[in-house]
Amino acid sequence: MDKLLIQGGVPLRGEVRVSGAKNAALPILCASILTARTLRVSNVPHLRDVTTTLTLLAQMGMDVALDERGGVALSAQRLDNRVAPYDLVKTMRASILVLGPLVARFGEARVSLPGGCAIGSRPVDQHIKGLQAMGASFEIEHGYIHARSERLRGVRIVMDMITVTGTENIMMAATLAEGTTVIENAAREPEVVDLAQCLIGMGAQITGHGTDVITVHGVHALHAADYAVMPDRIEAGTFLAAAAATRGEITLRSARVDSLDAVLGKLQEAGALIEVGDDWISLKQAARPAPVSVRTAPYPAFPTDMQAQVMALDCVADGTALITETVFENRFMHVQELRRLGAEIDVDGHTAVVRGVRGLSGATVMATDLRASACLVIAGLVAEGDTVIDRIYHLDRGYERIEEKLSHLGARIRRIR
Image (cartoon, rainbow, N blue to C red; front, side, top):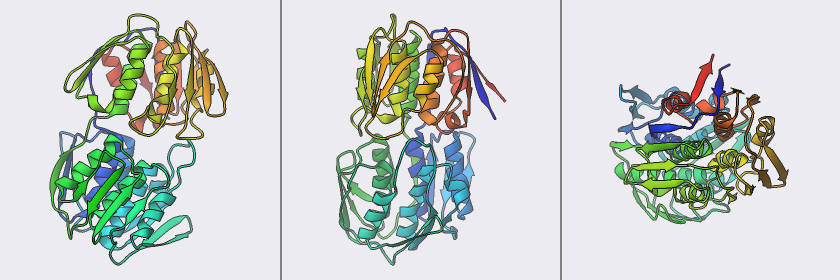
């Protein structure tokens, strides 16, 4: 099992390109099920979750062709297997995103209940509720969701809670439904908007994406399209937080500045000097960071996927910060590992009290989920001495060549196989 070895204490300096967004790429790849024509997707990150998704689609009968530039062409013309099996779905919750497209185009789907990071309960009831309202019938048997429908019909759906994948599943299904579907209390995340724009490029009729009310007018069929996945805002935020924690100076290229308002605001609060252009962000942190208190919430508020990285920054800040997690109930598992590095953190329910210390010291730690892995990398970059991070397969699910990119910025980091 691979590990990372980090020799900390080096400020990050230089330029790095932001990869395509995992959380946008996965639903866009699943959207290829909706048409018999070819969907060509570029700026696809080379990640374990992407590989799992492509393997799942190929197993269903999808023709999958990769090009030398990292793009992929997908054709579902000969897709004949409507089953998403447990051995693939167990590693990735986003596998549930095949459910809506399969039911919408083929009238049937059998999808294993999903797995993924153990950061709390992320039920699929909102997906099922929405598709049931559109006319699908469901049975849960032997760990599988079995859905059937003649043709879905457009309805008004009010989501009980904001759910990104739930919004995406229903939006994809609605593109081929009969009539108009209105999704209220919809997720507003940039990745939802990116999926909507891809679907529109395929011939879907969608309005309101980026707001909490999305309207989809169903069409008979979707057509071929070419689409580039948006840059990853969480990867961008992670590198910026790492530069701030190490008191470095970096520039991000191919960045989506407009998707990072909440994160950039908090980094400025920590004392970072930030400049932005149309597709670039530069950050310089000259002094010890000021403490930054955050409360996670759905977009456009501070993202839960950046909570752990900011906690790592606060570990070496000059003062005390409060971090409140409202999205997932079990997303402080990285606290115990940060304490092994010398961090002073107390947890009371959904709030962590982080008292900044002047320095961390290297130790062996274990990654517990994807963003916790990034948090430990940041802490390791700051810590004095050697830090070894175990179970980095979590990291490979969401960060493309992170050790290579950090090395390019001057970090002393390498993978131990």
